[in-house]
Amino acid sequence: MCIANDEAGFTLIEVLVAMAIMAFGLTAVLQSIAGALDASARAADMVRGTQEAQSRLAMLAVDKPVGVGRQVGGSDDRRWEMEISAVADGMAQVTVMVTGRRSSVRLTTLRPLAGRR
Image 1 (cartoon, one colour):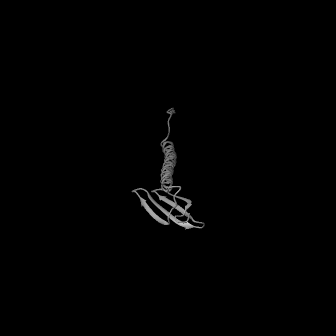
Image 2 (image 1 turned 90 degrees about the vertical axis):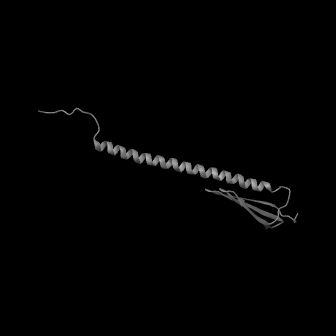
Image 3 (image 1 turned 180 degrees about the horizontal axis):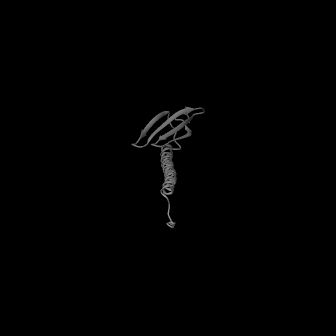
């Protein structure tokens, strides 16, 4: 007597292989999402740092000369440092560096040096 096996379906091995493939694929997708979120957070931190540095430079009045020196400050998640040093021809180099949790920004400009106008 011949018994016909007309039942359709997957074997246990096929199901396990499919689950393993799906697990590897899902892991890759989740790692990509995590990397994108981290890059987005770094970019946002860099934008905030750039805005802070630009703000510090803007606080120096455009028409008033600056004096040589160093200032530091910050908050819980961000630290800034402004250094003003003399360069040639009565000019001062003003450098502002803002350091956040994920990035740092450095902006430099030239301004007239105090007492040398």
